[in-house]
Amino acid sequence: MLVLIGVLLVVLGFALRLNPLVVVTVAGIVTGFLGHLSVTAILNAFGNGFASSRSVTLFVLVLPVIGLIERFGLQEQGRRLIARLDGLTTGRLLVIYQFIRQVSSALGLASINGPAALVRPLIYPMAEGAAERRFGRALPEPMRERVKAFSASADTVGQFFGEDIFVAIGSILLITGFVDTTYHLKLDALDVALWAIPTAICAYVIHGTRLYLLDRRLGRMAEAAGISGRTDRTEAREAGR
Image 1 (cartoon, rainbow, N blue to C red):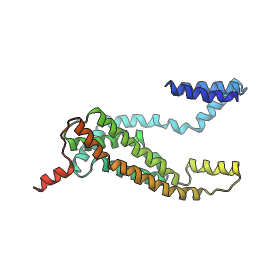
Image 2: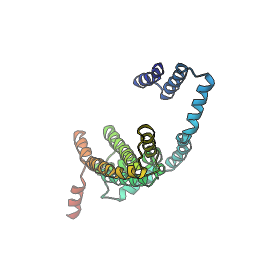
Image 3: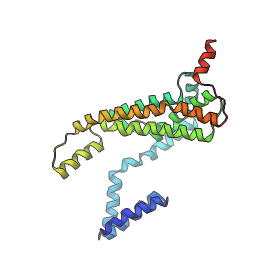
Protein backbone atom coordinates (compact mmCIF):
# COMPACT_ATOMS: atom_id res chain seq x y z
CA MET A 1 0.00 0.00 0.00
CA LEU A 2 2.97 2.35 0.42
CA VAL A 3 3.30 2.75 -3.33
CA LEU A 4 -0.05 4.58 -3.32
CA ILE A 5 1.73 7.50 -1.67
CA GLY A 6 2.70 8.52 -5.20
CA VAL A 7 -0.99 9.02 -6.03
CA LEU A 8 -1.36 11.15 -2.89
CA LEU A 9 1.57 13.29 -4.00
CA VAL A 10 -0.07 13.86 -7.37
CA VAL A 11 -3.34 14.91 -5.75
CA LEU A 12 -1.59 17.26 -3.31
CA GLY A 13 0.61 18.74 -6.04
CA PHE A 14 -2.34 19.49 -8.29
CA ALA A 15 -4.35 20.86 -5.36
CA LEU A 16 -1.49 23.25 -4.54
CA ARG A 17 -1.24 24.18 -8.24
CA LEU A 18 2.40 23.22 -8.52
CA ASN A 19 4.11 22.53 -11.83
CA PRO A 20 2.40 19.37 -13.19
CA LEU A 21 5.60 18.07 -14.80
CA VAL A 22 7.53 18.36 -11.55
CA VAL A 23 4.69 16.83 -9.53
CA VAL A 24 4.35 13.79 -11.79
CA THR A 25 8.12 13.29 -11.97
CA VAL A 26 8.57 13.43 -8.20
CA ALA A 27 5.57 11.14 -7.66
CA GLY A 28 7.00 8.63 -10.13
CA ILE A 29 10.42 8.63 -8.47
CA VAL A 30 8.91 8.22 -4.98
CA THR A 31 6.66 5.42 -6.19
CA GLY A 32 9.61 3.66 -7.78
CA PHE A 33 11.70 3.78 -4.61
CA LEU A 34 8.76 2.60 -2.48
CA GLY A 35 8.31 -0.26 -4.93
CA HIS A 36 11.97 -1.26 -4.37
CA LEU A 37 13.04 -0.35 -7.89
CA SER A 38 16.60 0.60 -8.65
CA VAL A 39 17.58 3.95 -10.11
CA THR A 40 18.18 2.28 -13.47
CA ALA A 41 14.72 0.67 -13.43
CA ILE A 42 13.08 4.00 -12.61
CA LEU A 43 14.91 5.73 -15.46
CA ASN A 44 13.93 2.90 -17.80
CA ALA A 45 10.28 3.32 -16.78
CA PHE A 46 10.42 7.04 -17.53
CA GLY A 47 12.14 6.40 -20.86
CA ASN A 48 9.67 3.73 -21.93
CA GLY A 49 6.75 5.92 -20.94
CA PHE A 50 8.08 8.82 -22.98
CA ALA A 51 8.87 6.62 -25.99
CA SER A 52 5.39 5.06 -26.00
CA SER A 53 3.72 8.48 -25.71
CA ARG A 54 6.09 10.51 -27.86
CA SER A 55 3.22 11.57 -30.14
CA VAL A 56 2.13 13.87 -27.30
CA THR A 57 5.17 16.05 -27.99
CA LEU A 58 4.15 16.67 -31.61
CA PHE A 59 2.66 19.99 -30.51
CA VAL A 60 6.26 21.29 -30.40
CA LEU A 61 6.32 20.99 -34.20
CA VAL A 62 2.85 22.48 -34.63
CA LEU A 63 3.30 25.59 -32.49
CA PRO A 64 5.87 27.33 -34.76
CA VAL A 65 3.60 26.78 -37.76
CA ILE A 66 0.62 28.23 -35.90
CA GLY A 67 2.74 31.20 -34.83
CA LEU A 68 3.76 31.89 -38.41
CA ILE A 69 0.26 31.76 -39.86
CA GLU A 70 -1.04 33.98 -37.05
CA ARG A 71 1.83 36.39 -37.65
CA PHE A 72 0.86 36.70 -41.31
CA GLY A 73 -2.82 37.42 -40.70
CA LEU A 74 -4.80 34.19 -40.36
CA GLN A 75 -7.01 35.63 -37.60
CA GLU A 76 -7.65 38.80 -39.58
CA GLN A 77 -8.66 36.79 -42.64
CA GLY A 78 -11.03 34.73 -40.49
CA ARG A 79 -12.64 37.89 -39.15
CA ARG A 80 -13.05 39.28 -42.66
CA LEU A 81 -14.72 36.06 -43.79
CA ILE A 82 -17.17 36.19 -40.91
CA ALA A 83 -17.94 39.84 -41.68
CA ARG A 84 -19.20 38.78 -45.11
CA LEU A 85 -21.51 36.06 -43.74
CA ASP A 86 -24.34 38.06 -42.20
CA GLY A 87 -26.42 35.09 -41.08
CA LEU A 88 -23.58 33.24 -39.33
CA THR A 89 -23.67 34.12 -35.63
CA THR A 90 -21.27 32.95 -32.93
CA GLY A 91 -23.55 30.14 -31.78
CA ARG A 92 -24.32 28.90 -35.28
CA LEU A 93 -20.64 28.89 -36.22
CA LEU A 94 -19.73 26.76 -33.18
CA VAL A 95 -22.63 24.37 -33.84
CA ILE A 96 -21.28 23.79 -37.36
CA TYR A 97 -17.74 23.35 -36.09
CA GLN A 98 -18.81 20.84 -33.45
CA PHE A 99 -20.53 18.79 -36.17
CA ILE A 100 -17.40 18.86 -38.34
CA ARG A 101 -15.22 17.95 -35.37
CA GLN A 102 -17.46 15.07 -34.33
CA VAL A 103 -17.76 13.60 -37.81
CA SER A 104 -14.02 13.87 -38.51
CA SER A 105 -13.23 12.19 -35.17
CA ALA A 106 -15.70 9.41 -35.95
CA LEU A 107 -13.79 8.81 -39.20
CA GLY A 108 -10.48 8.56 -37.34
CA LEU A 109 -9.29 12.06 -38.26
CA ALA A 110 -9.16 13.43 -34.73
CA SER A 111 -5.63 14.77 -35.12
CA ILE A 112 -6.30 17.06 -38.10
CA ASN A 113 -7.75 19.78 -35.88
CA GLY A 114 -7.94 20.63 -32.20
CA PRO A 115 -7.51 23.49 -29.71
CA ALA A 116 -3.95 24.35 -30.72
CA ALA A 117 -4.17 23.62 -34.43
CA LEU A 118 -7.56 25.13 -35.30
CA VAL A 119 -9.58 26.56 -32.39
CA ARG A 120 -7.04 29.10 -31.14
CA PRO A 121 -5.82 30.43 -34.50
CA LEU A 122 -9.08 30.32 -36.49
CA ILE A 123 -12.34 29.16 -34.87
CA TYR A 124 -12.19 31.42 -31.82
CA PRO A 125 -11.25 34.56 -33.82
CA MET A 126 -14.12 33.85 -36.20
CA ALA A 127 -16.55 33.33 -33.31
CA GLU A 128 -15.37 36.53 -31.65
CA GLY A 129 -15.58 38.39 -34.95
CA ALA A 130 -19.20 37.29 -35.39
CA ALA A 131 -20.02 38.64 -31.93
CA GLU A 132 -18.20 41.92 -32.61
CA ARG A 133 -20.11 42.35 -35.86
CA ARG A 134 -23.37 41.82 -34.00
CA PHE A 135 -22.66 44.32 -31.23
CA GLY A 136 -20.67 46.76 -33.35
CA ARG A 137 -17.66 47.00 -31.04
CA ALA A 138 -14.90 45.01 -29.34
CA LEU A 139 -16.18 42.61 -26.72
CA PRO A 140 -15.55 43.23 -23.02
CA GLU A 141 -13.38 40.68 -21.23
CA PRO A 142 -16.21 38.56 -19.69
CA MET A 143 -17.84 38.10 -23.10
CA ARG A 144 -14.52 37.27 -24.74
CA GLU A 145 -13.82 34.62 -22.11
CA ARG A 146 -17.30 33.20 -22.66
CA VAL A 147 -16.68 32.90 -26.40
CA LYS A 148 -13.29 31.30 -25.73
CA ALA A 149 -14.81 28.72 -23.38
CA PHE A 150 -17.59 27.73 -25.76
CA SER A 151 -15.17 27.55 -28.70
CA ALA A 152 -13.00 25.12 -26.75
CA SER A 153 -16.03 23.13 -25.55
CA ALA A 154 -17.29 22.67 -29.12
CA ASP A 155 -13.96 21.06 -29.99
CA THR A 156 -13.69 18.97 -26.82
CA VAL A 157 -17.24 17.59 -26.87
CA GLY A 158 -17.04 16.91 -30.59
CA GLN A 159 -13.83 14.92 -30.29
CA PHE A 160 -14.65 13.13 -27.04
CA PHE A 161 -17.96 11.70 -28.22
CA GLY A 162 -17.00 11.35 -31.86
CA GLU A 163 -13.78 9.39 -31.57
CA ASP A 164 -15.45 6.48 -29.75
CA ILE A 165 -17.32 5.68 -32.96
CA PHE A 166 -14.01 4.92 -34.67
CA VAL A 167 -13.24 1.23 -34.14
CA ALA A 168 -9.45 1.56 -34.02
CA ILE A 169 -9.33 4.28 -31.37
CA GLY A 170 -7.26 3.52 -28.28
CA SER A 171 -10.15 3.93 -25.81
CA ILE A 172 -12.20 1.18 -27.48
CA LEU A 173 -9.22 -1.16 -27.63
CA LEU A 174 -8.56 -0.45 -23.95
CA ILE A 175 -12.17 -1.27 -23.00
CA THR A 176 -12.26 -4.52 -24.98
CA GLY A 177 -8.84 -5.59 -23.68
CA PHE A 178 -9.75 -4.81 -20.06
CA VAL A 179 -13.05 -6.70 -20.23
CA ASP A 180 -11.34 -9.67 -21.89
CA THR A 181 -8.46 -9.97 -19.42
CA THR A 182 -10.38 -9.07 -16.25
CA TYR A 183 -13.83 -10.59 -16.74
CA HIS A 184 -12.94 -13.13 -19.46
CA LEU A 185 -15.75 -11.86 -21.68
CA LYS A 186 -15.47 -11.44 -25.42
CA LEU A 187 -16.41 -7.87 -26.31
CA ASP A 188 -16.31 -6.94 -29.97
CA ALA A 189 -14.83 -3.52 -30.73
CA LEU A 190 -17.44 -2.98 -33.45
CA ASP A 191 -20.27 -3.41 -30.93
CA VAL A 192 -18.71 -0.78 -28.65
CA ALA A 193 -18.36 1.62 -31.57
CA LEU A 194 -21.96 1.10 -32.66
CA TRP A 195 -23.27 1.71 -29.15
CA ALA A 196 -21.28 4.94 -29.06
CA ILE A 197 -23.38 6.38 -31.89
CA PRO A 198 -26.52 7.13 -29.79
CA THR A 199 -24.32 8.72 -27.13
CA ALA A 200 -22.62 10.89 -29.74
CA ILE A 201 -25.97 12.00 -31.16
CA CYS A 202 -27.25 12.92 -27.69
CA ALA A 203 -24.03 14.82 -26.95
CA TYR A 204 -24.35 16.78 -30.19
CA VAL A 205 -27.99 17.65 -29.56
CA ILE A 206 -27.43 18.67 -25.93
CA HIS A 207 -24.27 20.68 -26.38
CA GLY A 208 -25.35 21.94 -29.79
CA THR A 209 -28.40 23.45 -28.09
CA ARG A 210 -26.16 25.15 -25.54
CA LEU A 211 -24.04 26.54 -28.37
CA TYR A 212 -27.11 27.73 -30.25
CA LEU A 213 -28.36 29.53 -27.13
CA LEU A 214 -24.98 31.20 -26.70
CA ASP A 215 -26.17 34.13 -28.82
CA ARG A 216 -28.94 34.87 -26.32
CA ARG A 217 -26.53 34.63 -23.41
CA LEU A 218 -24.14 37.04 -25.09
CA GLY A 219 -27.06 39.38 -25.69
CA ARG A 220 -27.93 39.36 -21.98
CA MET A 221 -24.31 39.94 -21.05
CA ALA A 222 -24.17 42.84 -23.51
CA GLU A 223 -27.27 44.40 -21.98
CA ALA A 224 -25.78 44.06 -18.51
CA ALA A 225 -22.59 45.73 -19.75
CA GLY A 226 -24.54 48.56 -21.38
CA ILE A 227 -23.72 47.59 -24.95
CA SER A 228 -26.44 48.54 -27.41
CA GLY A 229 -25.98 45.88 -30.02
CA ARG A 230 -28.54 45.08 -32.69
CA THR A 231 -29.73 41.52 -33.11
CA ASP A 232 -29.94 39.80 -36.47
CA ARG A 233 -33.73 40.09 -36.47
CA THR A 234 -33.56 43.85 -35.94
CA GLU A 235 -31.09 44.18 -38.80
CA ALA A 236 -33.31 42.06 -41.04
CA ARG A 237 -36.38 44.19 -40.27
CA GLU A 238 -34.43 47.38 -40.97
CA ALA A 239 -33.11 45.95 -44.24
CA GLY A 240 -36.66 44.98 -45.26
CA ARG A 241 -37.84 48.54 -44.65
